[in-house]
Amino acid sequence: MEYTLEVIPLPVSDVDRAKEFYRDKLGFHVDIDTEVMPGMRIVQLTPPGSGCSIALADTLWDTMDGPTPAPGSYQGLQLCVADAKAAHAELTARGLEISEPVAHAPQDGGTFMYF
Image 1 (spheres, rainbow, N blue to C red):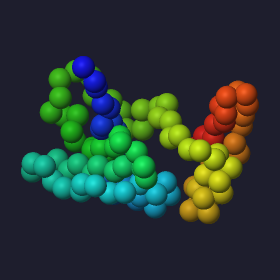
Image 2: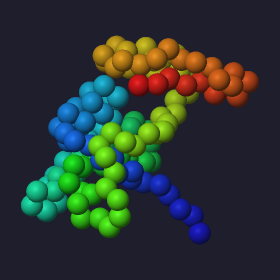
Image 3: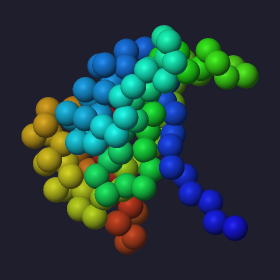
């Protein structure tokens, strides 16, 4: 059986501000921006060329069992690109504060930038 990872929910404190960041700074496409039930808005965005999206919400966690993740607590998402230097130039041109590319494993292209 095959499995696909299609949506990663991210807790945020300000859906509009997070939407603006992912859309305007990172260039994600806004797939969905809707109130799925009274008081619960979901904004789903997808990076260009990706099969996986993120879903931003500030109240979704109230309906789920288990601990409520704090807004901004999710760490470790990786966006993969073919050319880190070109991606760095594009993202800084959009006003994103991002580190310079650092080659941790130059033999296999393991280059990272952090924001």
